[in-house]
Image 1 (tube, rainbow, N blue to C red):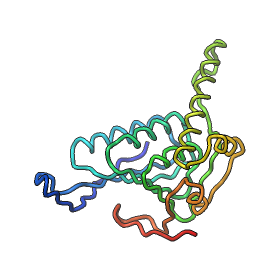
Image 2: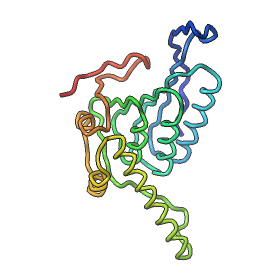
Image 3: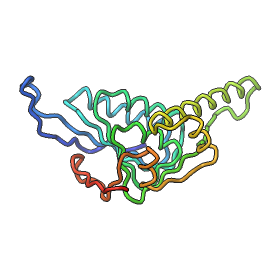
Amino acid sequence: MPQPPPQKQKNNFYDPGNPRVSFFMTIWYTITGAIDQNTANGLITWVNSQLYSGNVSRLVVFLSSGGGDIDAAIRLYHYLKGIPIEVEIVGFSQIDSAANTIFLAGTKRKALQGCRFFLHEGTFYTNNTSAVLHVHEETLTIFRELLKRTIEIIATETSKSKEEITKILSEGKFYSAEEAVKFGLATEVISKLPMSPNVVPPQQTQ
């Protein structure tokens, strides 16, 4: 389970129309390792507690994962897209499988130089290893729906057709950080991880 960030970063901000609001805050969260239901529950619970306890305007998520539970990744995607603040995601080392779905939730999607992306159909998990036939059929229906939703998310965020994304996932494809920008997965490549959520040195890509 990812550890909540130890502190919030305060950004000086004054709103003359609302003197009670003297600053907004940027909060950090880190996800590394396999993605599962605890990953989703941990982030959602912690971020909600911050949203309702302060003037949070921005969330920065540091993400490096070999993938995991697609259902949990889709849940995180919709949550991050739905919260009323700016979401920036910084990918480093590897963004594989289900991690791409979470990565695509960012308004700004920054890839550390050397980060690799891997798109493929991913892995589906079931607890019912022994069950009657209709239970297995129901499980397959759920798996197909999760794959369909994954394809829709990637196609929407990269402005590619669902047919193209379906083919890529079926065959499996790796992307460098620079190739991820060209494909539409990432929005920019950075050369260093930020020391502050407000300082991310960009690197130009061709």
